[in-house]
Image 1 (cartoon, rainbow over the protein chains, first blue to last red):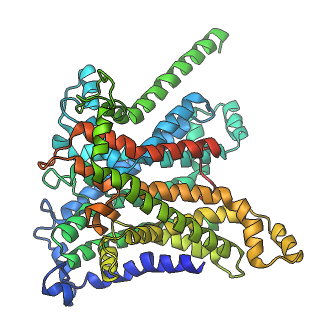
Image 2 (image 1 turned 90 degrees about the vertical axis):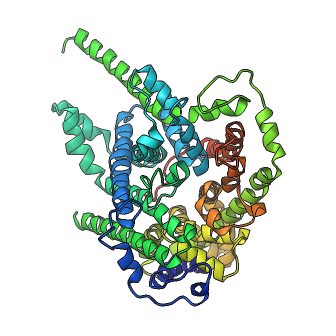
Image 3 (image 1 turned 30 degrees about the vertical axis):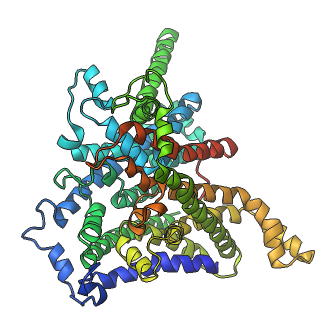
Length: 286
Length: 280
């Protein structure tokens, strides 16, 4: 208990308060302000939320907006919906087909970051990439994914990368529904859609909330798209995580980077509290 | 429905099932296809081509890159194995204490920790983590990487371990106590053997996470001889920043092997599924 407590305190709790302090200073890596950072109040935050250039390309607002789209399409629509579809598709159809598809999804999930990024770099290549070869066979043209459709590329990438989690979660959730419920519904003539809406979705509501919150948090904080696009072209895939990195470790403005990190944590905290309140509301009901 | 219609709809349903399954499988497998053939072809480019002839020459050339091999066989192993041991040890002790201690609200502590750890993520906290490690004088050391990963992975590890510890019937320990065993002996001889599968799961999970992690070593390490494979892979890029495709592909495959083997091992031994915890 004690050693674990020390680690958690040192690397989880401390950074949270440290970042709050750093974000109010003009600390940099080198130079005078590295040793004697000055207290600058809300200057970093004011700079981030400077409304005249807030939404310009490469600024914080643009990055935040981009991250919102990325999270919505790749986590909420993509991973959660595809995971639920997969779980429902293979419901009560266990066998080698199901385990093959599951294994493939899990592989996509557990491979190292740099390897999947590199594999996708090849997959999306304009001339020789597997995706365009398939599209060309179907007569659908050869878009230059990473240059012309960068956001679509990282959204697809993230869906592919993370669907395994919601698939596994929803599969185990569906497994906990007594089959007799669905059989009874079939007997009285309920359609597939009615069974899904009236029996399955209400019964796995907690799982859906859990999955949504966790994958939203993970997607919001992911750094892996950096390995695929480097945030470019022209900041078009610069998610907030990449913006933090660029501010803090390429321009070495730690104060400013700390302010961005602080905002990220507040957003995270918002998600977490929202999750807790939903869970509590559910427990309250019999 | 007449029997004929029913048979037809059954056949149609089967066909739809296999077509759907193929589409899903294609979505997941196509991006990885390239990785299975490119390492074995000396002429590999970014397209999927059957190697002609199959050759291991790419791997030979990878092994000539001492820096990258050292990263793979030493640095990554030190960091991932070190983190794995530390996470498993601390998580087991903490989960045992949280499960057995006569303190109220340990449930809340565990949940709170997990939530908080998903709030303070490596990406959001990269600035303070870097500054802390900098202040401790641990920049550019294996220890820094191990400690930071341990801190980040512990809450979830404790969460997983608790499920295993909670499943031990208290009567086992009580009988041992009655027989005169000390509390340490109870932990070692009664609890530990039962939670071993849990330690296995947590250990593998921590190993895979650290092994694949990029950002933390990328910002905390400076000297090339301490870089893990996730960062060292960029040594196969030319000065212009374009990858030597053949070598990068071969190295990627080598680097993924431990993860694939661990997956096969866990799948064979326990079946890959969710171990409680996230159950409602």
